[in-house]
Amino acid sequence: MTNETIASQLAHRTIRAYKDQPLTDAEVETLMDVARHTATSSFLQSCTILHITDPQVRAAIAEASGQPYVGGTKGDLFIFVADLYRNSRIRAEQGVSSEALSSMNLFLTALEDALLAAQNVVVAAESMGLGTVYLGSILADPRPVVKALELPELTFPVVGLLVGHADQDPGQKPRMPLSVMSAKNTYPRVESYTQTLADYDHEVTECTTTCARARASSPSRTWSPPTSAWAARTSPPSWRSSTNKGSACADSPSLTRPGPPLALW
Image 1: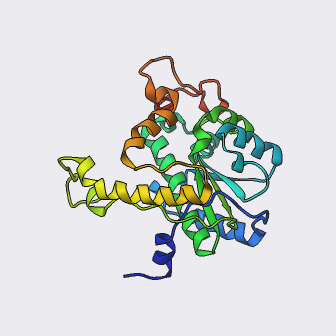
Image 2 (image 1 turned 60 degrees about the vertical axis):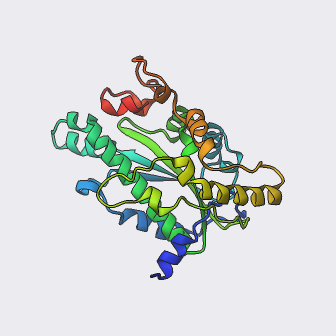
Image 3 (image 1 turned 90 degrees about the vertical axis):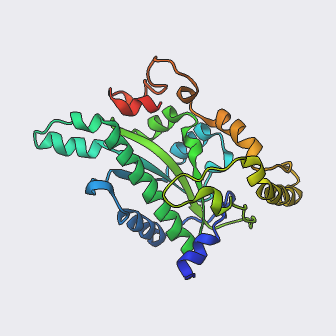
């Protein structure tokens, strides 16, 4: 079973090279309207999206991410922000305490709102023939991102997204078998992931070998062995530490309020 939307989603590829051709105002407005109509928990609408057009702000985000293609003018950069500040202001203006907004539950709600909106934008952009790449790398050190965006308290930059006209034609990366990543009712347990994913690892090796030949850069590899090393390399410091010294971003203006959300960092 398929249709145009499903076909577009199944053809998803990550695009990291873009033409120096910015999105039109109409295209940006369409994408933001799609984001605005995304499902939202409890109708709180706890997401704010920043379209980065200031070269200095974009350069700061690129430096924080460590990825050169984030900077410059190729592709339009959006940052999806978990936003409880807006609701805190509304509550304050109505004389209602904002203490409840420091709960982990509401922080996760805002996080979900931001991620759902980002994925809706990706689906819409790809249906318009545009390329996209998620930028989780902005969290390598969110402090300069928070500073550059002048984020207030009770906000957090969840993910970045580049959208634009593709200047490359990469192949699709193979995905894990459905039998490993989906099941009915209970978690799908297997005796040996190494054996279960052997064919998949072989497919990934062939894919990365082909891509490496095309780029003459990255060596071929399987999927399963590198994942644990990647997690250790990319996890925020506090995820690798059990210290109680507080947030790794404690000096960031948007992260200075006490409460459970800070425990994530």
